[in-house]
Amino acid sequence: MSSEVEHTDERIALVPLAQIKPLPFNLTTIDLKVKAMLDAEMATESRGLYKIDPITLRRMTPEEVEAAKKDYPFAKYEIVDGHTRVDIARRNGWQRIRAYILDVSRDEAFEINYRKNKERGTIDPVAEGIYFQRLVDKGIASHDIAAHFDLSEAYIVEALKKAVKSKAARELIAFEAYKHGKLSGKLLETIASAPVDKQEALAEAIIDGKLKPKEAEKAKEAIMSGASVEEAIKMAKTAKLEEEEAAAPIEAPPTIQPTIQPTIQPPAPPAPERISAKPLTVTGLQEIACPRCGAKAEINWTRREIIWK
Image 1 (cartoon, rainbow, N blue to C red):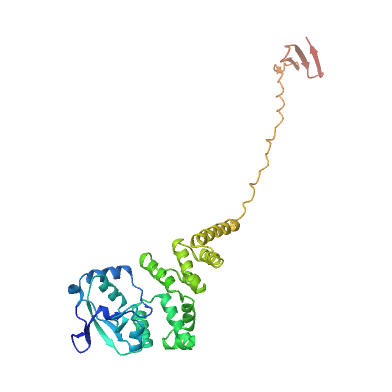
Image 2: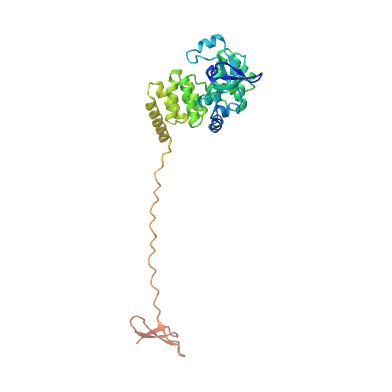
């Protein structure tokens, strides 16, 4: 294993991975399919060393080298761009990686890192908020940050809301993004709005409970009052269910239709029985018979009289 930097041309050097450390936080997020493809290309150092693009490093100051000794005892360079490639290289057992080496400050390195990831569309929204917060903490106004990066001030304000300061919480969020996808902006804002010492527990509750934005707010209230992660998840789910039940419209009692009695028609009177009658005779007499009793009579129409026989 070489412990010295080898220069392959005037601009690119072969740098031992042991001498490289990441920036204090990385602004990159990467699509899982892209990462899997990169992982396949970098399966071995001999295969990937000259296949992937060189990373970009900055030379650390003596003070930075001394401050990093506990975690990175051999570090001389800090990653400006290429954190994912360095992670994959280490995982696959590489010893060296090609790199451009710049003499820039850490603040300049952060800006280069931000601009490169912004151009590629690989910005981590949490890290973006933290980066802007760093600038605000240095006394730079949000409108000046917006002008510097050609963004709207509203964009800067929204990004600042997602600045999760707890490193442990950021690691949980990053791991969730790696496994299942990014958390929504609303969920990030909820985590970031909690006190730093509560952000890890809240992030865990949101991720483990697969909480939605309104549920996350309830979980935040629970954790702020001292509840455990499990209790916060349960309370958030219960509160959400109670809200839904309370908001459900009250069903009106069914309308009872009055029973309509059918109109009973009185029976029709029997048709009058017709009296059988014989035709008139030439003398004006007509014989009739009663249909019930059979009695016979003779009507004299001239004299208008009935003679029963």
